[in-house]
Length: 92
Length: 480
Image (cartoon, rainbow over all chains, first blue to last red; front, side):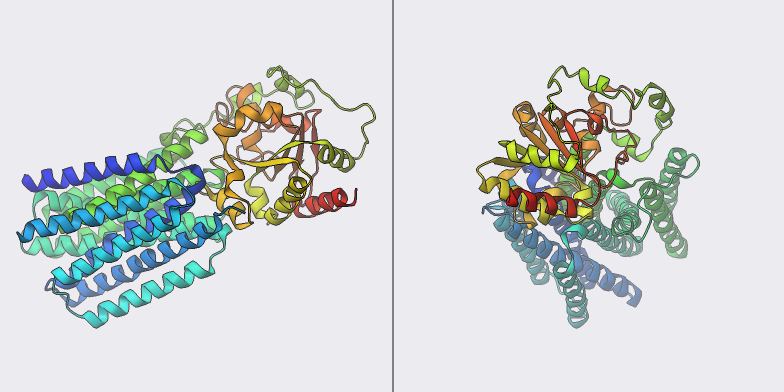
């Protein structure tokens, strides 16, 4: 029960704070915003690491490795693309 | 004490992440915001590596290097026109990670006990992750042109969608009751049906509706990550996932509002079939001025000695206009005419004219896409203006230059009832003194509603390749 409340608290708190901050982002930057949040959503990479932190079978590790590949593709690619886009936004 | 440390570190990382998103308020600071968020994620990874004994470090490092390397390669190679396809593909990769991790954790949990909360979130992460994966791959395929971009409607598509959702829930409930081989089979079945759900939802969406789909997938990728975090017991993952979910939901809402669409109508389409009604009500094409008359503005001011050649007329408008607004649409990006548009605009600015760009929220194939395309073409971001900000000014504008846009400047959205775009907010180009339309042809836009603006006496149509037309226009202006 305590676990449920803590998780719910973290979830709702982040959702609300995220909502407040993101509604202030101008439409001008919505594409880089989505590209960056997409990189953030690949924080599932932590989950991939945690699979390797516990004892498990070979097939579990294989699935974990695939998750690590796709998540790291997202993290590095996402932040790099966002940076590339944001460099275009400048004053002449 | 250790517990407190964990909390403090996690809270610090989330705070850094929020600072990063906060910096996206302005294009001046957004770049540092992106780096702040990247630093937050790097710290999170570091902390997990320090807190836990990760085995097979070489294999882990190899997997990270492979994925990261491919990600960087893609980031360097992708063009700005391909960005929506790339982002959609990345949503899909996030979905894969979420459903793989959830399935491993569910399997492990079944062996040494899992709380009911963990079970439910694991199954949610599994189903949402798998559906996000397939939905994103379809979206990406449509955007890059490997699949037909048109919506594909199956018979009773709305009902099919609902039934598939019910099926996913049912099989997930069964899965939660099983252990051993039965569990494995049901996990695989849940993944498969969820993949089917992603396909069913995304094939029916196409063209100008893509921004809604891509934003929605952004949100589901966030939810999948958050649920994954609950089963792992990681507050950090839950916080990050929820933030992304908030962002995707906001963008979905903005896109739906900008098209006057209801999200349920986009994805379930129960209200489809109204097309026949507005087809009947639509005003005859030979007297489209009637639709315009409602606005009560801008009496036709065609100069009596107007040259018959539309190009000459357009040239004259360009020469005499003092205040100009450019309305770019996706057609401009497809024709790769950004450079020519900017050259013409810059030339007019050099002559002392006032030029800005009006960007409709759904111009392009993802939220804000048009801004990126124009920023890449070296347009000062201060000249890129949002619809609500620029709309009151159209009455005082001498010339609107529409390039590759149709629905977003279609006054039928205001004046004709019952069309798919009725009530959709538009850029009020029709209120300006003159309009030049540089489109490939006169065909209606994605909505299929004919655009009366094309036949207004104030409008000059320059049909054909926008690149050529604009180059010719710029050259003639320079020569004059």
